[in-house]
Each structure stands twice: as C-alpha cells, then as structure tokens.
Length: 198
Image 1 (cartoon, one colour):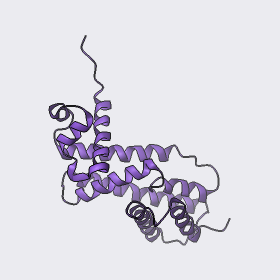
Image 2 (cartoon, rainbow, N blue to C red):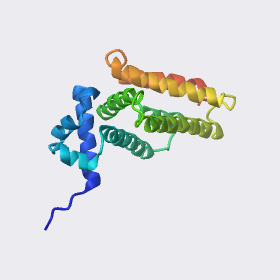
Image 3 (cartoon, rainbow, N blue to C red):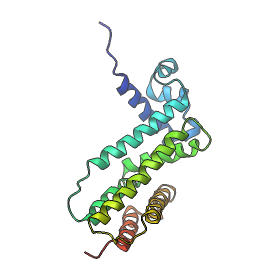
C-alpha cells in the first residue's frame, strides 16, 4: 500500500527548514538546493511542493504571520486593559527565543521583498493587517473609556506602529543594548502616556 503523505505538513516542514537556513546562514544562502539539503529531501521533491524560491519564501513568511496571529488570538483579554494591550504588543517583539527567530526571519524576508515583486503583496498585506490591528485596538480602548478620546487615532496608530517596529529592530540588531525588560518598560511608558490613570 502506498505511503500517504500529508502535503500541508510537508510544506510546513520545508518552511521551518527555510527559517533555519535563513537564521544560520542568511537569506542569500536560502536557495532551493540548500533548503532541500536542510530538509533531507531531493531538489526535485522540494519543487513538487514549491515551484520557485519566491513561492517557498512567501509560504514560509505566511506561516510566520499565521503563528503570530494564533498566539495573539489565544491571549487572555481579561484584567486591566493596559496589561491586556501590553501582552498583545509584546507578542510582536523579539522577547522570547520563538519570537526572536520569527523576527529575524521576517526582517530578512522584508529586505528581500524590497526588490522581489512576488513577495511584495504579502509584505504589504502583513503591514496593513498589523496597522489595522493596532488601529482597532486603539479604537476599542477609546470605546472602553481607557484611553483619552481626544487622542488623534491616525497619528497614534502610526506612532505606536513605528514604536513597535523600532523596538523590534533594536531587539534584533542590538540585543545586548536593550533587554527584554527594557523593551517592555518602553511599551509600558508609552501606553501610560495615552491611558487614563487607573
């Protein structure tokens, strides 16, 4: 009887091998040949799942995005709004081994998306989803009466998104300059500037 292969599981396994190659050797080494070697399958077998390197990278990055969303949707929303928002935002930052790996891979992907037209739609989609999520979060906080209703929503959305992006970059590029605790303290300081005193 022929062996039944779970194609989606295989695609995820290949994507995870792609992450390992990127983190260990850099994006320029994330070739189909090197990823096939990392996965332990032939180049021909890999091409059965992904027709091109761009398709493979896009799937790998989509998987990063999906895992972040899954973790965030599982976060408790109970407790003081300030703490709930901090938990949400900290999932976007390289504060644990898992989130650090995701951020390293995502930054490499974002760089490649600057010139790879096949990757640009996904890069734009994730950017818009995150921006929209931050805006929705702020709008919900205003409805709850936790945040000053006079906060300019567009400006605060851009400011908070820029803060998250900047902290993520610092956390990856200069991990010894800014500890996880210091990153969380910066988030806390910023949020308290727009929250009502509790």
